[in-house]
Length: 323
Ligand code: SF4
Ligand code: SF4
Ligand code: SF4
Image (cartoon, protein in one colour):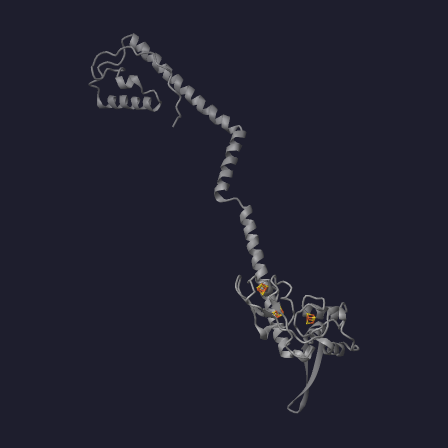
């Protein structure tokens, strides 16, 4: 960064104004490059080459599109002598223009992806074409083409280097390359975000699976803990108590029947007594013992009014699930 101090006059008096020049040496070098983004200098674009020259990692004679004039410009900025173009980077030549043979193009889009300044238009499986005004003649679209349908004829006659390329063309190419770089970065970020979302979705259990897993876990846990036997024990105990009570009631009933003290003349019971009988029957049914006795009304012969007959021995009631 350098500072430029200017003296301006206001109302006849000199006034000092400090202007900050934010351009770095790399910026200034980049301003002098032709911006074809061809990579012939050995760097992925003009900007990285400019930075490498600024730091001394690259020599200032590696840009074929700039040619001899380009080297002279850089030498003047750097305060160095003019030297020949490094032949390892290529030769200075008339500027080419890419032309696609549209009859042969298969629409693979590879050239479009390779073009550093978005000078090719087309769509997948559609014919592609080069926008001549935007083409920098960088040649980068040629190698990827699988059907060799891109030619690069020279379009500047004998003119080479900066004589075949204007500053306005260079500025326009730089802007297009910067826009493309920003767009690709946005697309890459969006693709990574989508991929991350897909990974997160694929590793997270589905709601149904999560519920099933939770149920399985709960079942497994309950099967492994003492809680399950405890519940079974409680139910078995309850059934045993009910069975014992029923057995006592049966014995009591048999005893009373043997003594002739079973329920008699239940046809004309009061409403309260009938309600108690009904409740007892309902309870018997609820406990799973409402069978032959209650259906036959053998307990009280309510329909006949005759004395009750001794009941037949009962089978123990089937265990039922308590409510
Ligand atoms: S025009 Fe090509 S060779 Fe020259 S600096 Fe840019 S990318 Fe490198
Ligand atoms: S069309 Fe081909 S030669 Fe022209 S700028 Fe694009 S990649 Fe380079
Ligand atoms: S690389 Fe060749 S075939 Fe593929 S779209 Fe470009 S010009 Fe057509």
